Image 1 (cartoon, each protein chain N blue to C red):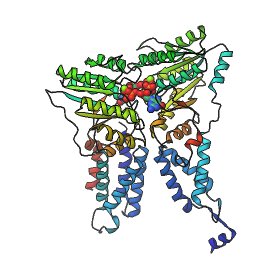
Image 2: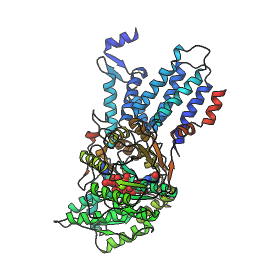
Image 3: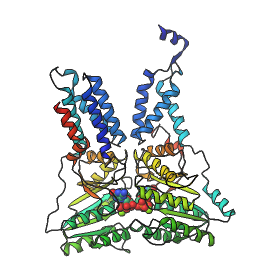
Image 4: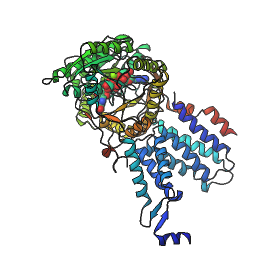
Length: 315
Length: 306
Ligand SMILES: Nc1nc2c(ncn2[C@@H]2O[C@H](COP(=O)(O)OP(=O)(O)OP(=O)(O)O)[C@@H](O)[C@H]2O)c(=O)[nH]1
Ligand SMILES: Nc1nc2c(ncn2[C@@H]2O[C@H](COP(=O)(O)OP(=O)(O)OP(=O)(O)O)[C@@H](O)[C@H]2O)c(=O)[nH]1
Ligand SMILES: [Mg+2]
Ligand SMILES: [Mg+2]
């Protein structure tokens, strides 16, 4: 009877019964695309809350409403809230007669050193004078790896004002101290940018997380970039949460720092399973500055939100 | 290891089951929902989780069960069987033979931990008295040879590689031939990271494999990998026909479900897990005892007996 009346008015109300099966499919879809399961759950809950009790036209489809609402939510999360214009910030630092400092942090093997080198290539193209600070003093070959990159990048630099040097102090030393030395070397030698490479570390390894917090506290870089790989699954949540937490808890500072942005690497390895982009931005509320799409210096792109949020991918 | 965390969740779902006064379809669905959620949160492939759910429902068939049977016991067994199925393909990994050369080739995605694991594995066999050597056939990654060299030097393991030669196939072959001639028993070949979307690099991997004819190819996989695990593992299986898997970076918080999905996708067993960056951070992996431990079998037996 009741629904009959509703029918003549041309409106139905969205109920739990109508929404839940659609949302359950949606959640599974997101997980399949490698969104962390907790985040998929949260997103579906918030779509549910926003749609419950809403009116839907007789011919309207619940699935369409759910998808539209999800799409809007995903776009909101993925769209940067702050400017991504690093070059402008570099200019600003230049005006202040100091080098602009970026540190690259993250777990093991995600692509910190490689993508630091890609960022360096990009800065060289923009005619900056760059110092790479080899502050991974632990992993075998880490210093030589950067040496090769610096050499390659110099060889590629046939025109323009850009130049690159490597600041290295070998293995086994305190990375915070090396970063400090590098920054003062850069200041006195008029470098525009310092790129700090750090050792990979597991988010639960307290001594290593303390050392990282110290490096950040001592050197106060302009940008702290978390490098995360698009391959990572549910761990993305734990990694970002604990990196941020450690920067805060172990800094000994009144106003501790946090992750300022993300480089999402290995985007070329995951086909349509783009969920890590969402997990990482959701957890940090910080933007993806670049996406790594391969192993050469030009494989560094900007994230196109419309590319991630579309029918074949997230939604 | 945090795989135990998954075990705890599954176990507590099973304990809930044992507390339910009546075991009907609703109770079974609730149990499966909890277990599937735990598996998904551990990165087990979505399709595998669906299959597990369906298989348990099918094998339990609660509606046609008589009143006398112990439903709880049957459900628990069905869940256990499916979990075993997931981590144990029932395939024996390659066992090296004393007194003759055994060639291992490491393959995997970029940054998975191949180079680090090479030395760990070499050190493992060296400790057991084998004559072991390492070959660096990664001519691509910056600093790859230095990395292997430094690790090998620390572990006092002979190594072969080159700063100038850039053909990985010929280096691999030269290195393996040299160590074979010198009567080494275990020769481990490190290769560059690659992924299935890179056809040429996959071709290169096939060529290295054809040249050195490994007795065992090992797929090294990062324990934090998510839903991309299955398709990458399948592609590596097809191209390199690996015989076993080593799951790395299990010292963190990762639950390794992605790597478990790789087992199912490739029907190849996990033989070792990496638990740190140091040379000795390598543990043997036994799937059966893993599931048993994961589910806290002691508790399980109590449950079943009651
Ligand atoms: N396919 C692909 N590979 C990448 C990308 N970025 C980095 N890599 C590869 O990933 C591997 C690891 O990269 P590194 O830069 O050494 O990683 P890292 O985070 O510095 O590693 P650690 O310092 O050992 O923690 C290398 O083989 C890189 O070539 C990317 O965007 N796509
Ligand atoms: N915490 C931890 N780190 C590991 C483990 N295995 C490897 N790593 C680290 O992971 C990073 C990448 O390891 P590599 O051995 O260089 O990886 P790879 O597969 O050889 O990388 P490519 O040759 O660039 O493809 C390094 O920082 C290693 O120290 C592990 O079990 N635990
Ligand atoms: Mg590095
Ligand atoms: Mg390597």
